[in-house]
Amino acid sequence: IAEVLRLYIETFDGMVDFRYIKTPEDEEEFCEMISTLLAQHKDLVTLISRGHQEVRRLYPGLRVDNFLDRFFITRISNRVIAESYLALRGEPRPGYVGIVKQELSPAHVVQSLIPPLTRLTHEVYGFAPEVHVTGALECTFDYIPEHLVFVIQELLKNALRSTVERHRPKGTMTTAPIPPVSIELQKGDVHIIIKISDQGGGIP
View 1 (cartoon, rainbow, N blue to C red):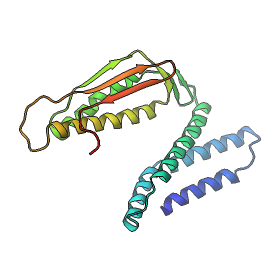
View 2 (tube, helix red, strand yellow; view 1 turned 60 degrees about the vertical axis):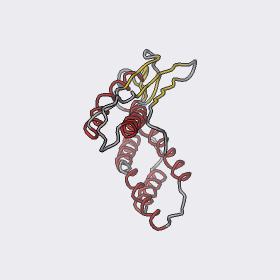
View 3 (spheres, rainbow, N blue to C red; view 1 turned 90 degrees about the vertical axis):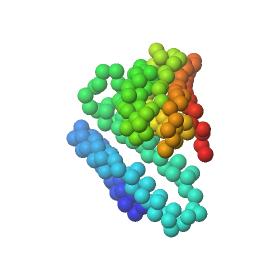
């Protein structure tokens, strides 16, 4: 916790104390500072996790869920702003505006994640459910690829794990088929919905 606090105080001081930007050289130095700060905060999630464990050991009844929700939403927002600024200053990437990918295909993201995650499930449990992808596979939208990959990866990983553990627990010899995990893409007038369904039994 103390290390996290130190990082944020130093970051705040560096931003506040930076001189008014008047020249390209000033802006270049400011850009370098932002890049350095982003690198310094790279492992902050791990630090927060360790700090949370320490606090829970000292104060078992303390509830910090709402604080952590606000903290991580703010962290994501700040990083999006900083990374977009750096990306817009760098060499243009075809199909991107800053860090946002134009016409990003969620179907392509899903299909790219299925092989490594089913392989991981198979390595851990000895087998893995099939994954069926249906719906509006041709839909696209403008989004940050890394964010979409992270969300789908975690949801699909949980769906595969829970399906295996429910239908073929460790120590059982059954060879009954495992129900598949289903991913459906739906495109509305404004939104795109990515629905991941499994038969893993839900939250216990």
